Structures are given as structure tokens and as C-alpha cells.
Image 1 (cartoon, rainbow, N blue to C red):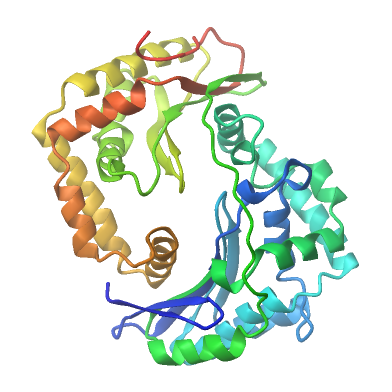
Image 2 (image 1 turned 180 degrees about the vertical axis):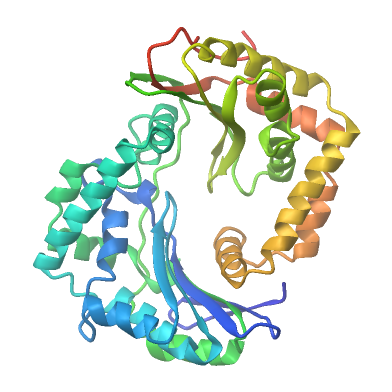
Length: 415
């Protein structure tokens, strides 16, 4: 990755990575605003704003926004997370100017007409209902809320139906004006793109962004606990996790290798011990969720009501084992998986684009691939066991949805 970075006079950062072997460009705007920046009464507004940005500007109707990008065979989309909102496109290289124009238009000149807002509120409420009807999806919201109770970090990205319906046009517009500024936005592009031309486009297109906006972000405070909901389902859905670490934590790479080794593939400990040897689950995996000031390490499993009681003791056993004993073969395999994933992702312009934006936001620079690979290679046996002990010894968070079962509650590994 050979990224170039330019900071404009208004504070907007522009980063690009030229790939001469492709005919496309992936580009977008990454805004350092997400669910954790919302107060309780407007939970879900970042996601509402993401939807409404596509519903018409002073120059284009909602249909014209969609039609203009699809007329050149491009794609336009967006997503909201707990710390960011992204608006991105993929086009042929000759249509880069159009993509920049559309994204700058929706982020600076959205009109958010009341009738469009009313329709989109209904759509979002349907999305919320769909999530609630999908147990292996909504379980993670309950897990997050249990880990971070009574704070923005624990609230759902989608918000609630009641709060979404209550949002007025003025509320959404004010939120956008207060949070979307040049200084907390990054324009990133990867593909067959000339950096200087992209900078010129950004200067001329993103000229109406408000000045620097100073707003504080509530510090995340992990608590942990247990959540359980009885539903008439065929499976029990379990998420078990612990206080984790941030992207900038020195143990980030060791935790990434640990997650891969512990539950990241078919050769991982959890998959082999719980699915392959005992047939107790269809799906089981571990995950590492990181934020700017913390994170979580967790395990998801889907199993039957009769098999569920065996899960917690088995997961506990595997946690205890990985703290005391890890083989070099396991570490080599996990490092290889992680390195392959990193290097294969570089073949995608979209992934490169997103990686650069995230790295620039977190570290103030794009991290060379060689540097990342070196840090993965440096993870050794002692680091894995040390990080496992650090992560698994604290208070646990447990969320369960499904038929009534005798599954036990995990509190902590070290009593």
C-alpha cells in the first residue's frame, strides 16, 4: 500500500492509493460520527441520517441520485457503526468525478423533506423489526447493551421504533450540521486514481462543509452481566464475552492471532472441540470488536436446547487451556490465516479504501502492509498466553436467546 495524504485548508483529509492494474475506483467519505455520539433521546439518529442523505438534495431527487450512479454502472451505498458513518461508491475510473460530486452533494446539500423523512422512518422501523426477528442478529445488540449498560456505547445502531418515529426534520438536520464537519471527515479512494486530481475534486466539491465542530465523546465503560430471553425457537443463541482492547492497544495483534487460533476457522480450538468432536453446535466462532478506547472479545454459538447446558463448561475449559498451553503449530497456522486475510484484502479496491480511511482516522497515517505483517509475525507463544489471561480473567458478559434451557451463567474465569 503506497498511500498519499493531503489535508485541505478546511481540515478535510484526502487519502488515496493508486492501483494501475485495475479499471475501477472505490471512494467515499468516512465521518467520525456514530451511535456512541448520540444521546439516549435520539438513539438511532446517525443511522437515520445515513438513510436520509440519499433522499434528495437541492440538485437531485432521490431517484436522480440512484439513477445517475447506476447509469454509469456504478454502486453507491453507506453504513453506520458505533464510531463511524461511511458513504461510498465504486465506479469505472472515468466516472470518478461523478462519484465525488454525488457524495459531496448528499453530504452538504441534503434537503430531508418531511414526506421523504416520514417514508424512510417507516422503512427503518421495518429494518428494526427485521433485526428483532433474526435472533442470531439481535443477540449481539443485547450483548452490547449488557456489556455497556446505560451508555451510548451499549445502545443499538438502529435505535428503537419509538425514537426513530419521533425524530423531526429539524432534529436530523441539526445533528448533521453539528457533527458533520471537514475536520472529522476523510475522503478516501483506491484504484486507478491520480491523487492530485482527487485533491482538486475534493477542494472544488467539498466547499460547503461547516467549520470545525467540537463535541465530546462519552468514554466507554465496560460493566458486564447477563441477559436472557426465552423465545419459541429451534436453537439457543449464545454470545459470551469479556472486556477487550482498543485498536491502538499494544496487544491488538496478539489478540487478533488469539481470536483466529481460538475460534477463527475450522481448525480452531472451539470448532474442533465443540462442533467436530462433540457435534454440539452448527455454528461457533470467536470475534474481536475494537473501538478507539476499548473493545470486547467474544464467542458466538448456536445450539439446541438439549445441548446448550454443555456449552459454557466446554468454552470455559478451552479458555483455561489456552492460557496455559498453546502449540507452535497452532500459532503458525493462525498467523498464516491472518496474514493471508490481510494480503488477499489488498486485491479489493473497496477494502483498501476502507482500511486507509480507518487507519488515518485512528493513527493519523496509513499503515504499510509490511509493518502490519511484521507485527503479526512477532506474536509468539508467550504473547498469546499472556493476552488470553488478560482477556478471559475479567467479568463476563453473557446474552442468550432461545427456548428454555438449563444453560449456566458464566461470571468470570478466575473466582
